[in-house]
Image 1 (cartoon, rainbow, N blue to C red):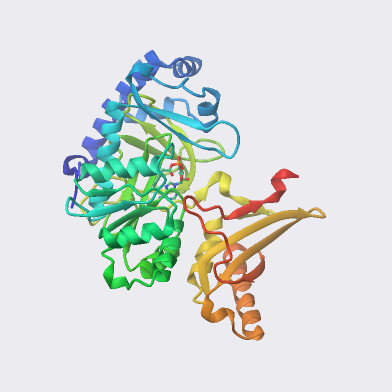
Image 2: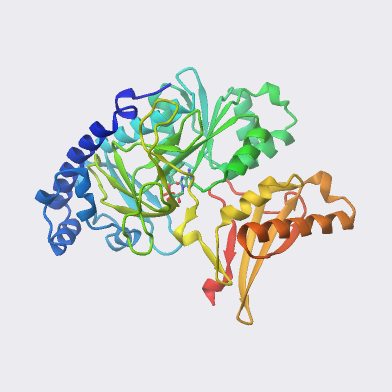
Length: 433
Ligand code: DLL
């Protein structure tokens, strides 16, 4: 099922024309209503008249997370406060959060793109959907909430936490859909097992998982543990929240709502555009928002864009899985390491649970790299020799994938702390030296 066929299946040429018209309007809006943007454009020697088609986008200045911090809280709004009906914020690792203001029209756009996602996941008005993303300033809860209501489904506004109750209501209310982070989905899978309620008594079929990077191996793990289809949903606060992109039934890349959010891929170091299909940093311009439109926002997310038509009939550009964030990348003894590489190795090994934690430190000027992995119950009590052999195999696999041999520690089942929202999987102590 497709929610908005006109937009999701528009031919490429018409889409580019539409994007051009919308970009032009947005540039005019920010130029006349938002001083920092006007100043930036003047500094670059450009005016709204220089933006006629979508190809002109490269003339525009970038916006960074730092800009959102510098103009905290409302400096980047392009609408008066009287038009802003909602605020959301995302907490950074340091200091003040990033704040986004939405007009009524922006909330309607958010509902619309969210409805595209949940429709693509196969959900509709007959379905009960449990929303276990956190409600509040985080966009996950309320974003998914609006989406499910828009398609006419029944929302269980659970929020995260209170795991036993999650399982009880999922069972009693007959939830068919579950929306939460992939790491929390795994946590709920264990809780479901512990509850003693047989799987056949749950109606759960579909998951809408996002807000953190996850791998194909993690998807398989969730799908088999929960017995559902696990779909990827992508988004970020600065742009709108969940609903910027979603997978269709072919689970072959994330379709982007490019009639609202125009994507580019640039070299993360130089900002130069990459060639179509190349990996780099994802950049978005919102081309329909009123409250806080952003031009060429540097997401720090690393991926590539896929322009081939999808089997589902949608023509929208797709995004490959997020490899990680530029700033998630660890450099250990000079080697670039993404936590997702560790995750894929761990998830492919039968004896391991899909939970891990990476510790990095620097001792005597040498980087240390430790990976804690949880061994499954049935393998943990095995003989020491077998565990030693398992450890050796993990080190070997990680060495061949990453090019570094970490110090692997096998730990007891369920000893690594579980998360109810975005998982924290790395402790890099070097930063505090
Ligand atoms: O995480 C919005 C969201 C909520 C998306 C619920 C999906 C579901 P922020 O807290 O601003 O917003 O974090 C945005 O999270 O730049 C990515 O690095 C990461 N992220 C979000 N979705 C995905 C995904 C929400 N599906 C940041 N895959 C983004 C990988 C994701 N990373």
